[in-house]
Structure formats: structure tokens, C-alpha cells
Length: 395
View (spheres, one colour):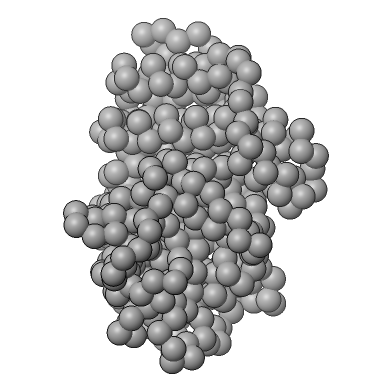
């Protein structure tokens, strides 16, 4: 399928590292954590070697930059679950004074504070964020859906930073009067935002290639499977929602599976297929073209700035870094972006991971108007929960 490509002007917002300080009752920005040796598992070491090659750095430098990132991701998930009324955003910052940064609206709970203080590196904590992630996400998705539904709007992409309340929206238009469409976008965004967000609206947008695969008519999975998933009474495999689900049976790993359900686009590009008949169920996933397998032992959403890898049946395995941790594109939300961009058709739905941690499944990629790849897109691993699914993390 041919996808029109257009030039996209990008701007990404990161938290400014807070100056080191001793926390007291009056500080809204302070530093926690300690200095300790960080263990690297064999699986992480393998990914770091691949990442080092992608970034053109040594293995030791890659280890220094990214070792311990999953400890932070786990602490961020604790904050997200325990303090939804306070948690705002988090960023892995290996090249700054602090290894990690996290922001809250107000003071985090003792449980979250303890999890952050236990980390073996410096963590910059801010308590003066503009919005919580949960509140920001509701408005973000509402604005995305409202603009995408406007006549004359061809494609919408949006991303933002809850800590600053800044949301950037880019859009393509097919209307004869660009000005008329721009006025409608501005009015719609302002109405839905209700003054709660700092909006930046950019006409011109981005061309995104969703990785549809060639369907030859055989009952074969046309994309790449993601992770083994379980529901209340069934076990299956996840993949991207834009992949084909209209065939009576889908073939995967030597066993037949049938379509289970697909998520609403606002909850990510995700569907799953139930296994039919006797099949061995494990928490393994393939990650090399040579058939290498790993166990996934946990699942956390990615953090901006952290290292990440993926495998797809077309392009094999690649590693890079997370650019934006929560992004919407057209009707799809709960996505993240990563560079360098290397996804190919057929990779859709494939696993994103780091070490033995599941991170997401492939969605697509973004390119500029002259064919230059900008970044890849994937659905956050946490989107599985919106289908009532759990990623299998035990044998």
C-alpha cells in the first residue's frame, strides 16, 4: 500500500535536570538514590552489544549509559499504579548529571519515595508538575479523536509532556481551504482542552507508514506475533490490530489460532488470537532470525531515553533508544517512538523488549517528505490490559 509522505517538524520536550539538593519539607525539586554496582544479565549484555553497534559506541559505554534502566522502569510502574493522582512523567537521562528524572503533582507516597530512594544511582525528583499522566492522557486522547474526526483532516499525530502540560498536535489536511480546516482544528482543540493544556498545533503533519503485509490468501499470520497472552479462560498470542483478522484461521508456531478481539484504536494497535487445540504454552519469545528465544519474565512500559530492542520477521532484531514514551498517531494512541528507524513491512505486531522485559509490539514508522526515516512506532506493553489480557511472564 502506498502511503503519501509529508514533511514533519518535530519538537520533543524533556524535563530540565534539577540541581542536586537535600530533600526537606519545603523542596519541590530534590535528588534521591545512591551509588551501587548494577548487575547486567546475559540477555541485557547481548542487547547492549547490539545497541552499541547501532549507536556507534563501545559496549562499556552502552553499559554505563543504560545499565539499571529497568530498575527505574519498575519504580515508575509502582508510581503509576500507587500514585495515579500524583505521578506525571519519567525520563531516563544517562548523559545528564542524574541517571533518571521523575515528576509528580505534589508529594509521592511513602511507598513510591522508598522505591526511588532504593535505586542505585541519582534520581532527580520534581513535585511541581503541571498535570498527572492520567489526567493528561484523558485530554490527549480526547483531543486526538476530536481532531481526527473533523472533515478535511487526513492524519493527526500528537505527543506531549504531562509535567509541563504541553501537547503538540500535527495534522494533514485534504480540504481545499487549509485555513478553514486550521480554524476548525484550533477551535476543536481549545474546546476539548478547556484551558488545561498548552497546545501547539502544526499543520502539515507527518506521513506514517503502517506496516501492512501482503496477504496471499493462505491462513497465515501476515505480520509478526508479539507475546504469549492469557485471558480469563484462554491463551493466545498478541499482534498489531491493523494486521489481518478476517481469515477463518491464523497459523502461528505450528498451531492454529482464531481471532479473539482487537482493542479500540485509542488503546493501541493491538489484537490477539486464541490457540485452538493442544499447544505448548510458554513465556518465550523469538528475538533473532536464527531462531534464538528468550523468556519474558516481566513487562513494563518504556521510559523515554531508555534502551530498547525489537524483532520482526522481515528486518530481524535491532536495538535503539526510546524517543517519546506516550504518543498518538491518527486514531492510534498509547504508542511510543524509537530511533533509529528500521521497521519493515511484515514486522508489525512483533515484540519490543529489553533483556527479559516485554516493552511493546510494533506498529509502524514515520518518514519525512523525501523518504528519510525518522522513527519507529510501537504500542506500549501495558495496552494488553485494555483487552483483559496479561502478558505471560512465567513458564
